[in-house]
Each structure stands twice: as structure tokens, then as C-alpha cells.
Amino acid sequence: MTFVASDASELRESAIQKAAEVQSWSLVEVQPRCRSVLNSEERVRLERFAFEHATSAESYDIVISNGSYLETPCKKGVISVLPHGRFWHASGSLMAPDEFKPEMVRWLKRVCESQKKTLAVYSVGVDEAPLFVDAGFEVSKFGEEPILDLGAIAWRCKEFEWVRRQTNFCLRAGLEVVEVAVEAERRAVGDELIEIMHEDLKLRTYPKPLRLLEGQFDPLLLLRRRLFVARSRSTGRIEGFLACSPMHNGNAWAFETYRKRQDAPRGTIPFLFRDVIDRLQAEGVRSVSLCLVPGRGLQINAKPPSSKMASFAMSLWYKRLNFLFNTKGQDYFKSRFRPRYVNRYICVTPNTTVRSMVSFLVATGGIKPHVGNLIRNLWK
Image (cartoon, rainbow, N blue to C red; front, side, top):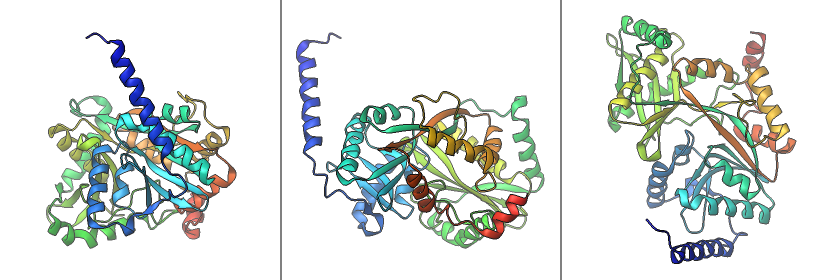
């Protein structure tokens, strides 16, 4: 196909018009909007938008968790935001058509400059990071996301021996995996699932999920999230559960929330993972995200170069602070499924500071650990 001069001229004019439109948007009135004030029509539109454009494991939480969001004046782009004073913490990266993302990033930069806000966008993918670099954001590696490419996973070779062994433990213990897809069934098991979640978290340094890092789970507000439970065939007791969030219009799913009882049969979570992976693979799903491992691989393929302060903080967390949030344990467990890893980034404007990192701790709830559990886990 021949590319003529008139085509190039039209493209340039279109780009100029888009840039002019972005420049004309008012910036002073832009404020994060709390999701609790949305009407039913707005909630439906936001959910549909998140389902179609979610690109990270945290993206779909915009329609489930408490918090706020920023939306471009043209309503083509949305990002989840957790405000804390002069700091805005955004999780889940951008939700917008690919062709609009450069304009959206430039708009975010201008909004923050006009309002003197510090914006930190977490879990930005490798395809979006250059857009933030071009707009003048400080871009640092946040960690790596383990991805399973579906279509040919059969669990036969030696590298999956551990997964097969966990599955066999659970089969001998009489467990089965069931998808809970009907609203009435979700209501029937809702209290039991909340009980399991609290039991799984009660001995941890943070007995409540950390915002921005862990998804909020409400069995009565799943929308298009999918819920799977591992239960005993003989007693019907639920031993663990897995909630999956959609990405890329349902062509990919993220294993975002998974919990089990303290006395659940050995291998309950790996058993759940394997069974659900097989189901999604049979449905033609392209990939599964096992969710970001913060701090992993900071010295590998760290392009663009990371902020020294951000890199030091993430490296310290991954190597020395697992008694707070066990990223190394997560990494070891997820690695048993032999995923490939992709980089994820933090994009900050104007730059990372001690105050911005303290704000992150306050916003996530990381500033308030359970003291008794902290001492116990530090001793271990």
C-alpha cells in the first residue's frame, strides 16, 4: 500500500488537533472523584471501561475497592487514584485506548504541575513506561510480573513436579474445585469466605489487605471477577478460594486474591491455581497474571535507569523486610508455575522524595502494622 503525502498531512493535522484539544482542557477543576458518589449508570460505564481496558492485575479494582478516580474531560481515559494530601497514588496504570494514552499521560503531567501535586503511578507496563518518560515523569522499576502464556501447559515435564505433587495431596484429601458463578450461591458462601480471609491474615504483620498492593475482596461485589473455591467432597467445607480479575477485555485474567484456612490440606492454593489455569486454557484465554512481585529483579533490565531512592527502597523491601510483607515468599511460590517475567514500573512526577514514600506507607496502611504479629514475625 502506497503512503502518499496527503495521508501524512492529514495525520499531522489530526495530531495537531488532538494536542490543541488536550491543551484547552481546564486543569484547575480537575479533582479525583470518589467512587461512592457514582450513580448506577456511571458505575456500569466505569465497569465496562475497566473490563475493556484493564492492563494490569490491579486495574479492575477501580470498580470494586473504595477510593477515587481521575477521568479525562473527553472521558476517553481513566485512572484509579488514592489521594493523600498533596500526593496522588494511582494503581493499575492507565485505562484508555492505546492511541489515546500519550495524550492522557501529558494531561496528567499538566494537571499535577498546575495543582502542585505529586502523582505516583504504580505497576506501569513496559509498553506504557516510554510514554511517561517522554512526558517528563521519573520512571523506576517497581518489580516483575509473572505471566503464564496459556495454550500448551500440560504439567508433564519435570519442572512441574512440585505442582503435580501438591495436586495429588489435595485429591487424596478429597478436595474439588468449583466455580461459584451464581449470585445466590455467592451470597450463601459469602460469610464463610470472609471468615477464611480473616483466618489467613490474622497472624500476618498486616492483618488487613494493604491498599494499592492487594486487591479488596467482597464476595457480594465481584461484578465480572470470577470466584473459585476448593471444598471437601465429603463435608462441603470450603478450604480456600481464588478470585480472578479480568484484563484485556477478558482475554487475560489475574489471580489477584487467594486465601486458605490455617488447617487446610497441604497444597490447597497450588491445587486451585492449577485447576483454574486448566479451565481458562480450555476456554481459549491467552494468559494469566500471577500478580506483581514488588522489588524483584531490580538490577536486571532496569531501563530506563531507576531513581536511586526508589531503587534502594524497593531493594531493601525485597531483601530485608519480608517480615513486613513477604515478597520473597510470594516470588518463590509463583516461580513454581514456571512463568515468564515482565517488568513493571513506578512513574512519578515531579520525583520520588522521602515525603512521597511516607505518604505511600500511610495511604496503603503500611504505617500501622499489628505490633504483636510484627514482633512474632520479626523473631521468626
